[in-house]
Picture: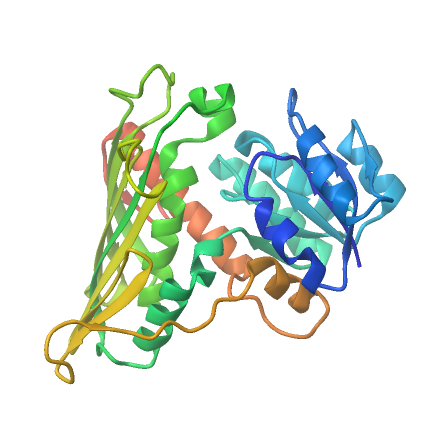
Length: 332
């Protein structure tokens, strides 16, 4: 199968790591946003496939090479328009998240997807990390009973971000870019639907990063009276041992599951204290997506998940912008 990569901004590493396991090859690379530099990415791709071509215009690349799959990983404000171009050509799409940075653009992507007859998945790759996959399997198998409460955390080092992060139009906001992972965990672990959200965010003390928010909090009400909170920050100290600190705590009627520090911990009636679970081996999200495209399996991240969680993140951002509670289905 033939793969084209549009942009070099997001998590294209998922693709580079897995491409050798997929019976596919990257045949073309092009920028997806103005000013995007894909030279380093192209050098990596050429090392994998010396026949790969570089293009200045991704549309020309899609029309000339006619790939089976487009990997869309440009500046976040352009993700929706680039994805639509691929979908209109009946090309499968593996997209950076958020799939869109506005509700209207998300609606446009969904409409294009409904007509295309192809597969699509957002890069919710943290689902595939062994600690999260192990914890999700255990919760799904009932080890903590019925899920009642979730708390999720995304904490990153800020460092020096590219200029497009400093503008809401090109960045999209910290809730849709960083917080979307934690919002996805809430949906994924609980199996519930979002009913309402009240959120807040702040760009104070963002070290000259323009409009970029460095702190945020989202409070969600879900079906079956499940409650969830998501905390997001870019204030992790530069001398911390890792770039990020991802955590989730899932409280059930029969126990508690925690993911932190790359491990999964269970506290329930069968354990004396907190029990560390043996981690199951992880798998690659891009390999999984390509298997689905070939009709050989089902990706853990569906198109429906991709759209639904993106909308939840955008409504949470709207709540934070306007300082009011937003009910899902009543976002106007």
